[in-house]
Image 1: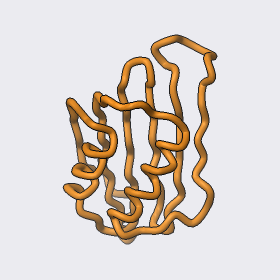
Image 2: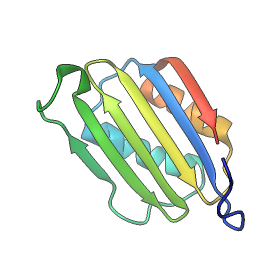
Image 3: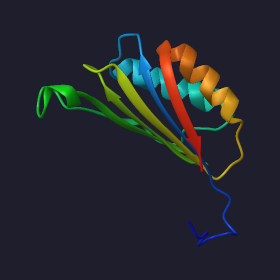
Length: 118
């Protein structure tokens, strides 16, 4: 992929995983606060958490969430019935991916995980 803005630093980490814990809106908000602290960045606005609330397909029930960071943002997608999550950390500030992975694994009691940096 051609870098269309080489003057802008960008680091992205996609985490997809099977987890073993209960997830609700408060759990996601706690994750945002914890991961922001772990990566030494700051949330500058209210995180948004949406729930499907029983609409749509059974397998797709869960949450879509976003936390705006001073340095970009974090998106979290949760499939509660499948116990599957997808997290995208997108920053304009260098961060240590291993810290994000260790924190996320512990926080969600991850059983199986795949990641990619880009």
